[in-house]
Length: 307
Image (cartoon, rainbow, N blue to C red; front, side, top):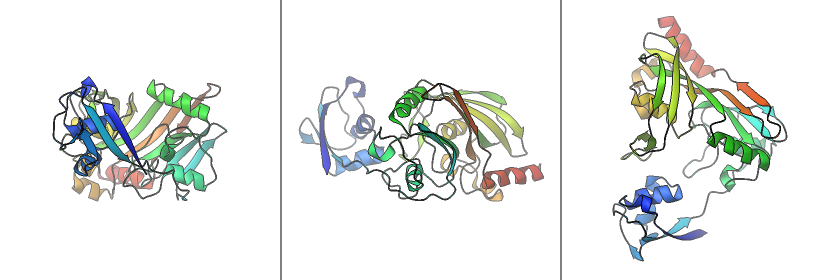
């Protein structure tokens, strides 16, 4: 099934390319937006057009959208560890190679599917494919996630993440030695202007703030403690690359493949190590910690031995 949406273009999108405007209006990737235009599924003031046409505020945009992804099918996820559970929340330690929820183009395991397979129910709030999910981790990032089990928890936690009342700390191994050794990266993030699969620091992007502090310096890399104020897609990876210290192993954002190979890394060295928030029902402070998994710890051991 498909859904036809007809909306007047907001003035704030005036002058943008059609594929960019579509992306922002409907939460699509630039590639998906361009594919819709090229398939003839988009009209502007009643006429078909091309993805690069500049749009004008007030124009009538009509889009035939594909059906939304279905809810996650239960699928056991080896290594997905439940570290806390009650009637409202479940906190998990996510292994590498697992997405938070289903999305177009992803056919691998998900946190939502793994919880369902293990008999853990989650909230019915949210889109069908991401019910209960109040924040996400990248497929290649390990560590702590909280998932809402009750609709109350979903609502309260969504507000808490939006209002920055949740403390998220990450351990990140980055190339080189940031100077200063502790600081803040305050730089807006949006989709990369030419590479749809990436994000970038972009003028006019969404406000994004990352605080970092060097915990240990090795010969070729530094272990950082990172605290996020905001939670943009790929935020740490983008901000570290922007200050010329990409996460070790993060080839998407310019990391040195030679160093990654020497450390035996098949993904970025990034781990969600700590999560603190007020319980959504009674307000008591909840705090959880997670040690780096074996592949990340091995990389640290190799660096320590070489320093």
